[in-house]
Length: 173
Image (cartoon, rainbow, N blue to C red):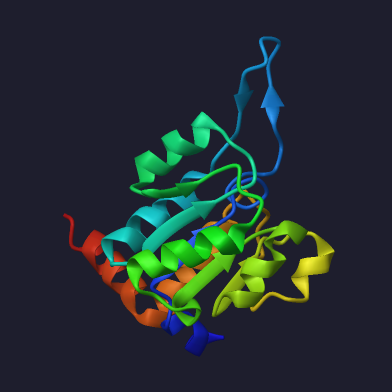
């Protein structure tokens, strides 16, 4: 598992059930909202500073996702996607990456094709049982509750870059 994680240059994430708890909050005016975990965001921001690329590919469309991605510096945001492999192929071509350099985290059966192609993949603790058996990395945390943090941190620790992040914060006195 560590050898797979060492090769990762891009982390691709699903949104609902992975970056969020999978719940859709809709108010009386039909306005949708989602909750994102700041710990997940911290790992994405730190991963980006250490050279990891990040992408979002999700089946739903939401302005909230665009806003959160922008806050985290994620420029590859693909929403309302039914064929995630088609989009992922284009992203990899753009960045001249192979599937062995991709980590993918998702939580449901629509993530199976991308999970099977990615060199390293992961699932939140509460992922659909049908995909858990396919995962290289199984988070101890639910989607939207730090699963992405664990996944990204594992990749960064495998590559030796998490210690650099910690050292940077230790030296900020």
